[in-house]
Length: 369
Figure 1 (cartoon, rainbow, N blue to C red):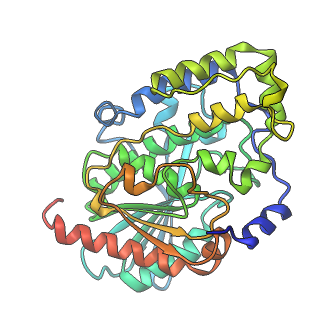
Figure 2 (cartoon, one colour):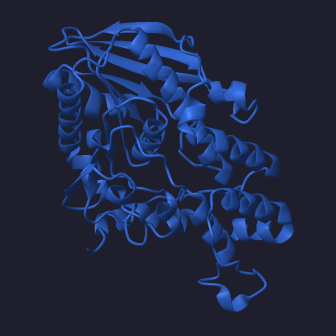
């Protein structure tokens, strides 16, 4: 299967660079990698967020068919790894869209933001409001910690991506527990592109069966940054330079990879014959390995419906494990076209997958609330 020309063309129009600051501070890498060992264990995660973690609603707006509640809470990551989040991201913000009249039960789907999906307008307009109309379903839209107060979704450091993942896993847990306390049921999670990948990470840490609908994402983020069209936006020269100047980067990353059981051939940066296109292979190999953890299997993979684009140039599926391999029992639906065309014109397929996964849950677990 080829890749979408629209995906390639669209990426060429954008000037955004990724990881312009390089790997991030060595001490930040060490702290977040140590925490990753904890957050990657579902049993250990159970005690990280208190059952009664406080959540606040500070504004409510009434529209013709729904109520829109703006809320916030303080990210648990700030308590667990103090100072690792940017100051403006310590307060997690969300928007909660609920129908004025529920059709059946009180279903709510948490929607995580995709790359560039700042604030709430896009998810509210293209997904949440139609879901109220079509299915009487509520949506909780969580702001991405690195998009708050930013106009562009540029991850400055590699470490930012891991901090973002840790924050979103914990913040999703806060919201799922809050929704449970408030009597909403059933609950599920979705996201498009990076939002779908982050939703998958969050669900693997949830100790109960839950619908998961990752759209335009796959089993790993490694191919997105190393072989997809976004790989051309990565500042490989800066990553290579930091490797050459400060050995602590390589040491810390190798330590984490060995903990994760990753085995790879060490490539010396002093061997020019192993450079491709001017990029040292060391940073590329290590970056690919870092973004290829073995995620825990969700409690019930039969509640997972993945929606993929056949010609996605942003999320290549070649050379990585498929979701069916790591999560046996999940369903994968394929759309024709690429990443951008699916995002712009096929959100109705995403919504249908959400309804189907929620219906599947309600039939299988009618008393689990």
